[in-house]
Every structure is written in structure tokens, then in C-alpha cells.
Image 1 (cartoon, rainbow, N blue to C red):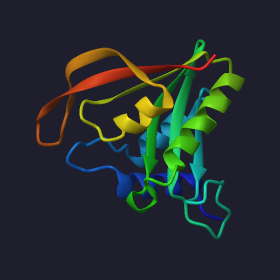
Image 2: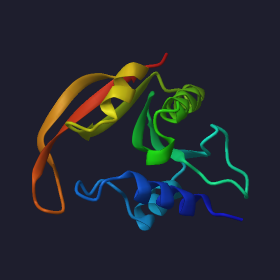
Image 3: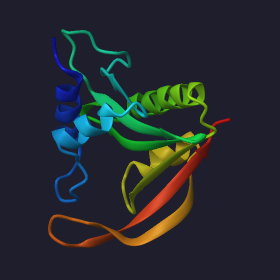
Length: 152
């Protein structure tokens, strides 16, 4: 059986540009999932949970807080982008977050991230900024923008 963490790591490797240093390592993913307040979903390119014979093409990892759910990571492999998989992952996140008592989704990303269009189209709106919050592997400092999406 293919391990979901292996799938997450493969998607992350294919999806995140190493220039920005945004991908998590396996230990970070494993540690996050040890706590009962972190959740994930892996989907194949057709939008369903992959069986043992199917490749995964997208995932999300989130953390539940008091009446909020924070999207920690979301990735779709380059060859599966533009087909609605990112939106399907966000919709599944919303459904799960509501079932866990959340009224709002949160996320933080670097300014200029191309995924911003997906998030805004889903209903996320900016609520804050952290100047020079992220540091790339080369030492460049990048601003972070915090977004929220009301879900209930």
C-alpha cells in the first residue's frame, strides 16, 4: 500500500518551487499529523481519494483551532492544475472544517504566490500582512499575506 505521507511528499516535491523554500520536509508533515487537530486529504487527478493503483495529484494539510481552520499547505501537481482539483480540495476542506466547528478558514502565503487567484475565487480575502516574514534559501526576505474565508 502506498503511504499517504509518501504521496504528500511527492506532490510537494513536484509542486513547490525550491527557490522559495516553502515545501515542508517529511518530519514536519509527520509531526503535524501526530496531533489530533491536524487534518489532510489526498486526491487523484480525477478528484477522488486514490486507491492503491492511482497516483495522487493534490493534497491539503490543515489545523483546527477554536472556530477556525488554518490551511497549512495545499498543492496540486503542475500537470493537474487548471482542472478544478484545487477548488475540490478547498471545498472538501470547507466541509470538514464546518463539521469540526469552524466558522472561518485562514491561510498565510507569500505575496505574489500564483495560488492567490484560486483562493480569491474561492472567497478568501486579505486580512493582514507581515512584512519580510519569509526568508528564501538564498536569504531574500518576502512579505506574507494572511487571508480569511467565512464559512459559517
